[in-house]
Structures are given as C-alpha cells and as structure tokens.
Length: 276
Image (cartoon, rainbow, N blue to C red; front, side, top):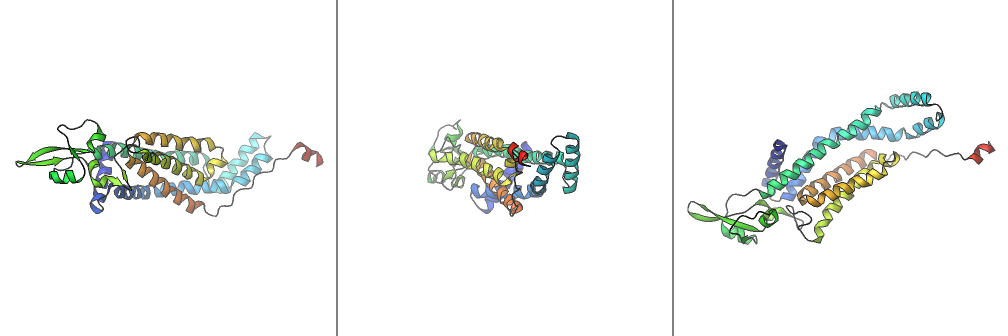
C-alpha cells in the first residue's frame, strides 16, 4: 500500500505545481483514475445494459416454465447465450470493479493524512504569520492543531518557520480546509458525508439494475455506510469520492440513455383464470 500512497502523493504534487490548490489537484487526480478504470467499467455497464434489455424475455421464460425447473434452467441458459452474457461473470466483474476503487480510496485516505501532515521546506516567519498561524514552542501532537501553528528552525544561522501543508492557503477549497475531518470544521463541513452518500446513491439509482433485481435495500445501505465512514476521513478524500461518483454517473447516463423500461409481466388473478 505504501508504494500506491507514494504514487498518489507524487501525482498530487505534480498537479499542485500546475495549479497551486490541493482541491484542484485532487480533481485532476480523480479524472486520471477514472480514465484508467473507464474501459473495464464500460464493459461492465454494457453487460448490465444487455441484462436490462433481456428482462422482458426473462420474465416470460420464468412465467412459462415456473413449474418446470429443468426446462427453466435450459431456457435461461439459451437466453444468456443468445445475448452473449455470462451470468457468473456478470456478477463477478461488477464486484471486482469495486475492489480497485476501494483500494484507491483507502490508499488515498492514508496518503492524504500523511500528505497534509508532511512538513514543508522552512519559510520566512512573516509567511507563516500571513497565513494566520500562531507560534508553538513544541510541535503539536494533534493533527488539527498542526494546521494552525508553526514552529521555528534555524537555517544557516537564521530563524525560519516550519509548518505543514494543511496550514497553507492551498489546503482551502471552496471555503473548506481539505485536511480537516467533518467533525473538526464548522457544522457546514457535514455536507461532505451527505454528498458522498447522495452521489453514491445516485450512482446506484442511475444504474437501474439494483431496482430490478430487488437490491433496493443495499442501494440505500451501502451509500449510508460510506457516508458514515466519511465522518472520520479528511475532506480531501470525500472530494475524491464525490467527484468519482459524479464521473461514474455521467458515464452511466451516457450508456443507459434511451433504454426503454421493461414492461412488467401482468399477474393473472384466480378470477381472470376462471373467466378463460
């Protein structure tokens, strides 16, 4: 995991050198990571598209052979073959695609925490005071305190300020300090866990397959779980997660646009059967 953290921080440093704001750097990083995962995710979406289109045929087969399991399995196998779908691979690929995204999120979590706590090169003391930092005689042990203080160091006989990335103006994005946890900022910082959960829910909703396959509960619970986890991670990681979900939603809307919703199979009542 350390090697991945190192790569992520190097990418952040590169984008920060282009635009001196860590929020913009994280957005660029998210776009790069989404581009790397675009092709396998596109293949998974196309499989889901085929699954949705074959739903009416599947319902008819289930209705026709509901009392004949052997014929039902045979007909379903032929249907999957007709549409070029591997039912086992469909589930496996959708699960496997979540793994790299989760690994990247956890690596970014640790990378961001180390990144914003990493001491910068010594700077003139007036630079530190212009950032609104206060002098601390000892290095604070709490990360939150580090973002507001500086210590001094001697370089070539002159006294310089020493502080961390989280204390710089570049750590601020849209009025939020990216190094903070939601619990460390004002009440409005809690908007980030909400945005994380909301965008993840919309990502599942635009996919559509969860609703058709009875996965509504998981479609709600999983975003809530990630939103709850977001309470204990820096805003910078939440920014990545929200941006990635938005990009995924756009990709899904492009793939699934214009898909006719499959008509539900009418349920015949006992009275209707008697009339026939």
